[in-house]
Length: 80
Image (cartoon, rainbow, N blue to C red; front, side, top):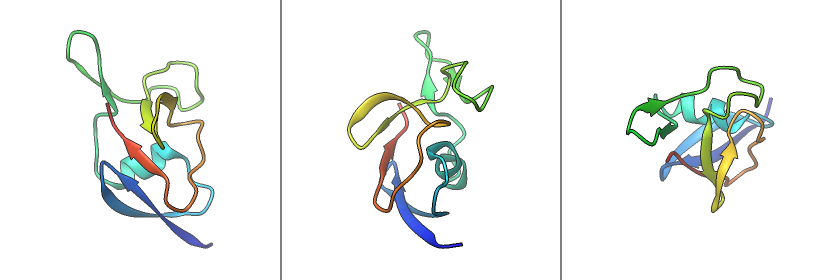
């Protein structure tokens, strides 16, 4: 399978073509995808877009569901 490069918080990460943004974030070693309004660290629970805990910024668009977005070469992901 072809590998592509995406950037998680500015760090280059190699993932298989077609991988989700959540996969890239995990592969980058990040454990927190966002913070709750009280400051608690949050991460995906369901992996299918129902819980909304995986919201991140992808290519400048805030509140994207990392488990539902497919990475392309050069995708920039920022955890919130």
